[in-house]
Each structure stands twice: as C-alpha cells, then as structure tokens.
Image 1 (cartoon, helix red, strand yellow):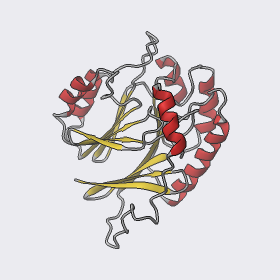
Image 2: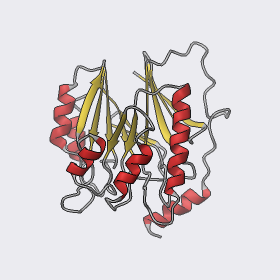
Image 3: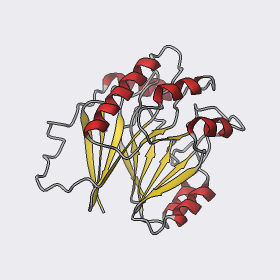
Image 4: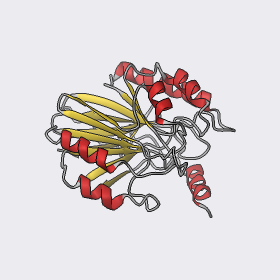
Amino acid sequence: MDRRKFLQAIGATTIFLACKGTDSDPVPDPKEEPVLFRFAVASDLHWGEANTDYEMHTRNFVSAFKDFNTKSSCGFLVLNGDIIHNDPVFLPQAYEALKDVHPKLYVTQGNHDRVSEAVWQSTWNQSFNSDFAIDDMAFVFGTTSDSISQNWLRCPNIEFLENSLEKYKNKKHVFIFWHIHPHMDTMGCTDDVKAVMKNYTNVRAVFNGHDHNDESIKTIQGVPYMFDGRLGGSWGSFDRNFRVVEITKSEIVTYLMTPTTRKKLSRFKM
C-alpha cells in the first residue's frame, strides 16, 4: 500500500474524540497561571484542489477562528503552508478569502504554494524567510519549498536559521514555523538542523504541517515539533484543526481546536 492510501485508511477509521470533558484532558487547576500571550497556527488549506469543497472549508475555518479569537484573543495567526494547491492562479482567491481572518496574519510557503518569492511578497507582504520579535519572544518563519528548480521540497535555509537564532539568543522564547518537518528521511536535513538547534536552548517549539494525518507532538533534542493535521485537502485527519499556543509565566500550553472543540491538551514546563 502506498503512503497516501495508508494515511487515508488511517484517517478514515480513526476518530479523535475531543479531550474536553474526557479523562485525557487534565482537570483545570483553579490556580492556573494567567495567559501572557496566545497565538494560533494552522496549515494545509489547499485552496483550489479539485474535488474538494475548499471554499466551504475556508469559510468554516474563518468563522470558527474569528469566534475563538473573540473569546480568547490571539496575538496573531500563522498559516503554515500549502495555502493553495499548485496553480498560482489560486493565490489571489485564497488571499481574498483569508485576509480578514486576523489583523496580524503570517504565512509560510509549503510545497504546494508554487509561486515565486516576488509573488508571495506582493500578496502577503512577507518574504519566504522572515522573523520578528515581540517583547521577550521571537518568531522565525522559513520556506521548505523549492519553487525555482520545481523539486518542491527543500531543507530550511540553514544560514538564515542560524542568523535568526543568534539574533534572538537572549530572548526567553523562540518559535519556528516550517511547513515540512525537517527530520523526515526524504528531506535529508536532520543533521544540519540538529547542529544549529543544539546551540540555542531558548527554542520552545517548532511547528510543522504537510502530514495531514499528523496531530502529534514529536520531541527532538528536547524541542517539541508540533503538528496540526489539516484544514482542507482531499485526505487526512477526520477533524480540521488549528493549534493554539498559550504562554504563561512558567509553562507553554498547547491544544488543537477542531475547530470548535478543544482536544489534545499538552503542557511544557520551562
């Protein structure tokens, strides 16, 4: 069985029940620390993919996220790659459908976002590799797509990664966003990424998409790599999720929204 058929089979038979109100979700601590900052990340909308109702999936996501953001304000939202499906003609359409989802919307390029950096920049006002800081936090965004050679998969830009991490080495928290997990065997990136990351212990999490069935958190060199399933596309997890990250004084809390019910809550002490 090929990879996609295997993943489709799993996605068709595995239903992840919402953790809220179940034994798998810890009972809230009445002394729980207040949230100092909150952001959200989602991936794999695949606007324009044939035989999918990508417009409906987008409307559902935008509506659900806006409702969530009204109740639990997020500092920003990240769309972590594969916003469109291959054809550049879909990018203006997707932008129009998504531009008002949050006042601060950031993006990464996925392997199906097959446009030049100039087009990407003019659409989103963000380059393929970028970073910024807010108070004691820094956020690093990188492409994992090769739109020049049309190989469509590429390792993160290691020089940019190292320069960004060095620039923010005195920040308390650094978060990295890449569409494709760099430690996949087919990527050939793992040694280079590990060599850089080991020098910066303030990296709190890396966020990946691409694997539509993956809603897990994988820990590598003490850093959690967090997946969020998918928003659209023709295959993948039963739910269509976005991930929420909340920073408190002593821990990072994360969970998935399905998009209206919370599940898979995890806590990371700092």
